[in-house]
Image (cartoon, rainbow, N blue to C red; front, side, top):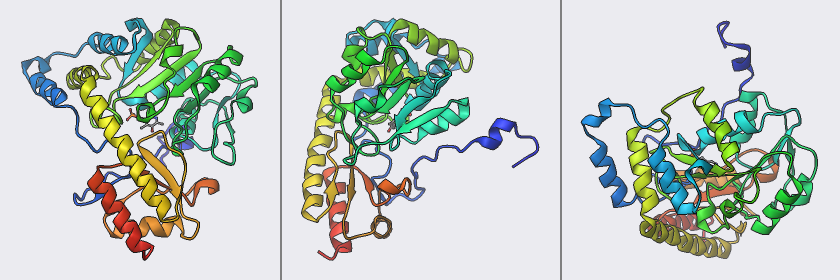
Amino acid sequence: MSQYWSKLVHTLTPYVPGEQPKINNLIKLNTNENPYGPSPKVIAALQKEAADSLRLYPDPNSDALKQAIAEYHGLNANQVFVGNGSDEVLAHVFNALLKHDKPILFPDITYSFYPVYCGLYEIDFETIPLSEAFEINVDDYLKANGGIIFPNPNAPTGRLLKLSEIERLLKHNTDSVVVIDEAYVDFGGESAVGLVSRYPQLLVTHTFSKARSLAGLRVGYAVGHPDLIDALHRVKDSFNSYPLDRFAQAGAIAAMNDTAYFEETRQRVIKTRESVVDALEAMGFEVLPSGANFIFARHPKYEAEALATSLREQKVIIRHFKKPARIDQFLRITIGTDVECKALVQALKKTLKM
Ligand SMILES: *Cc1c(COP(=O)(O)O)cnc(C)c1O
């Protein structure tokens, strides 16, 4: 605390990301990174970018990247916004599109960055409880609001909401923006991107950090009606003209264009997820249905905190959220390679003395 801080800074409770351990020999299943490296074409594009041209500023508008994203989704480039990770895109979304008189709505159990942005931009919010089975019920959102946001699949539950339910929400909710955060959609969900041309209040965000194996490059994007995209540009250009450097633009273009590599690695993660679910269920875990590259599981007989500690002693790190109370007995486990997941299952067997 300091007398030099602004009033706002005194009120902030910043987001705490999962640990990036400084030791190497851990099996890292705690932050939903992809276990497979980026496409070799991405590496080649980055190497090519390490050149004399680094003395020049990058394209402030990332036009070539927007074009690649637009082509992939069958949209126009004016329906695409890009940023330094989808976290930055989301920050601009809160500031540009979700700050109104009425409170915005999001689930009580969801991505814990949302309330942090509300604090930063002084936005009122109301949390809507997930059902007993940790599902989003669209009927609970059919009321006056300043905007609606949730991930699909949701995090950290991994549960999917059907596209028909999202469309039902859009049909009812026409006076405020609906943001669907599709950070994990490529691991088994139905994307709402196909709806953006029909619903001008819909904005869908994606990231290169998960299914495209580029968490270290920091690239994310939003797609929606050109008027929504325009609002995001107005905020971005009042904040940082160059959020994506030359490496980020070149690497993301190469990743977007290598659909074969993307398909192969995401299918591998999905396949491994199914075998991890089977192994955990055989050990007595209750595992929520997952459409993501992680699972959310609890054991009726063992404390989550004790399980997390025991795994760590065996060099496997996973994520345990202590709050809210409804999820304090769950572990969120990222899907790694088959070898990493075998090590996880072995470590759990040892802990459970099986
Ligand atoms: C990982 C994640 C993001 C952020 O991704 P970045 O592009 O790495 O900033 C956004 N939303 C959810 C729900 C996530 O899990």
